Amino acid sequence: MILAVDANAIVRRPLLAGAKWDAIGAAVAAGLVELVVPSTAVQEAVAVFDRQQKQRIRELRRFARKSSRLVQEALDAAINLIEQEVRSYPDALDGRLEELGAEVPNPPSIDHTEVVERATSRRAPFDANGNGYRDTLFWMSALESAEATGRFDLLVVVSADRVFHQSFADLAEEAGEIGVRLSLVRTLEEVAIPGEYAEEHLDLSDLRLRVSDVKNAIKTLAVGFEFSPAPDDDVSADFVTVESVDEVDIDQIGVRKRYATDLYEIEVTADLIVKMGMFAAQEDESGVEDVIRGEAIWRLRSRCVLYADESGLDNDLELWVSDAHEVA
Image (cartoon, rainbow, N blue to C red; front, side, top):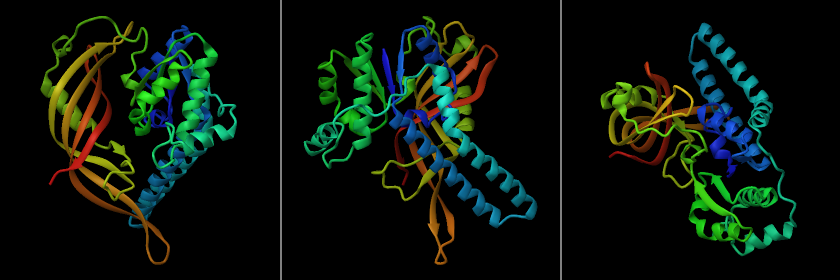
């Protein structure tokens, strides 16, 4: 399997930590997976991380202006740490990619006129408006890596960008021209890594857990989850964060055990009714930037992954939102 990872899959775990990334690294070392992270994806991930952290700094400075001197000093120290983290992040990400055995190819060695022709003809991943230059460089890097390796006939692209999924048929046909089958997923967690899970049929009772335990864990651990609204979402905020979870309506629960470990994953599909904090940066008449906060009740169509061992649930939660809208 050739696994091509886009920037939006990186920013969920900026330092590529966690069992999934570790499983990918083990599969790469065993020769079962070729991990490709084009340099364009790395550059975008660094840029997104920079923007997110600067947004946090703006929010901290806003609170600092209205706080006591003691709190201001503590917030100044926190800001300094965040700034250090931003400066060190590119090297930290490069180091982790090297540790995982990833290939980080530069933009493909193609005539620029080919990209222009794709744009003018609206060939995917360019969209109907001619947008998609970065997506096209990512796609062509993935294809070039797949053609060069010759070891695998399956290319799995991990990207939440809608243009890939809307253009699947055209992209699959292009991949087929070089003898490669294409699979598209939105999140890394949807990818079945060879040797990742034990072949056991499990449920909550094997961990001595109840559905209520899972609901309570989600209510607690989802607080603080942040995401940026998509460009076409009707939300006037730079980012939103879960401040409380009022209801958890579960559709499905599945339990899996990671191979050769004592770690279990509990995957849940559910609707969450949450109170969201909504934040937007604005400047006043004097040019001083401030962060404006609002709040609203939202319904989130979600996929959650909790972790557990035989002693019980861990304090860790992965959360993906496939649909979000405000509750009237």
